[in-house]
Length: 331
Ligand code: DGY
Image 1 (cartoon, helix red, strand yellow):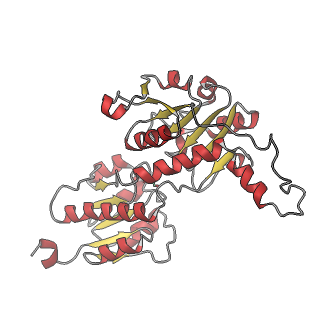
Image 2 (spheres, protein in one colour):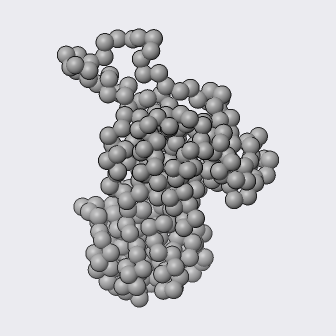
Image 3 (tube, helix red, strand yellow):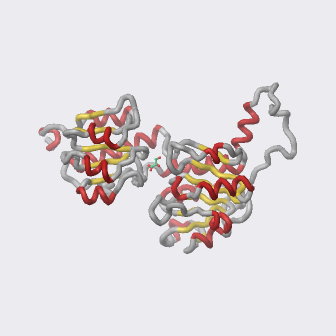
């Protein structure tokens, strides 16, 4: 019989409600402290829930600061995030505290690439304006009056150059899908990929140089000290006039003021955004613009992917409590 079956079950705190199948699997093995009301918990509330617990599972919307980590009871030895991103966790503080941190890579790739394609298409084909027009009541001033040759003309994907910033798993999955739409793939990555992974895409060692050909730019790098505020007014100025920007990575990578200005003037034709600096607050400048296709951080929001993320988080906890190295250990 495995160790965990004979000893007291570890106590695991869930910061938010997880998918039913994930909570069911977890309950079979751990004492669970769930958040059935699914209310957001701040640092002190998380710490209070962790009294006497062995592990904490958090999500990208939880801010796990150095102060929160320092205040966690010593019994908490592993923090599993229900996400691939770890920018919401002070990893340095975790290292100092000797707190193991794990994430959920791989399993979000397809879902996030699908959302990137939705944003690319939605931004290019003016989905926001089209939807609004189709929903306007028949007797409204702005009601649809019928097909016209010049109505809501968008940009075609076919034959356009798609610049991918960050050619990891998600970047490559977007490239694969975009190729099927006839797009020509360019990418910038820390290092050049082998031909088998590059699949004919053009590598740019310099992101600024890549921007010069970016009819479309899609962002797939993590938010780090190096990438925060990366898409500045100057960089937007390097892009061809009328380019389209899509971001499914992290809002902090974009300078919102610069992007809103470029969208207002038409320097950028459109943007598709799933992530925002300071979520859940969205810069009202974006909300006011018809040429921005906005989604509320839905990149990984499919039943399949959210279950897979939860199972992956549990695989990490299982390994840890069985004395094995968690497969997705970040710290
Ligand atoms: C992640 O896992 O980091 C994603 O942003 C969640 O959709």
